[in-house]
Length: 206
Image (cartoon, rainbow, N blue to C red):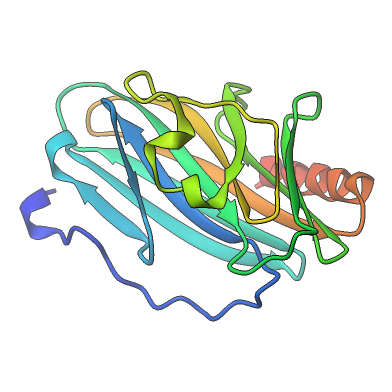
């Protein structure tokens, strides 16, 4: 594929979502740099010969599912991290986001609802999670080490806040890797965990 013939950002109209729906913004870290896909579903990183694409689906009324594809068009293996940020456009002080290290999940509590955020990539458990004030979301303040691609770990944030997780990938030359991520909405943690187990089971059977 000739990268020079591809657009840097493929703009795709997004549906207008209710204000109490978590917004999903994918991103990528590579070689001490990071890029977010704001208002687009495809991005070309020319210097790294990488393309990142996102496909989003509404599997059920309470499950939003996304697939993130990263293609390496270079001749060297790329060590990257796929990023996923979630936040509300508008939220009151009753919003709480926290990382559950035991469950290895992110939970958002808002408007008497609970939102579970998680991902799957080749059954890896090497996922970093953090919760941050929303005003730090697109800044270097999310990093413990930007050169190593390590997120600054913070287990909880209240009010205007965002969650971010990072999934490590090693992509061989001329290969494409895929990560699945989802947001599940419900009324309790146990309900969300149960729905997620059913979702993962259905993914395995496909």
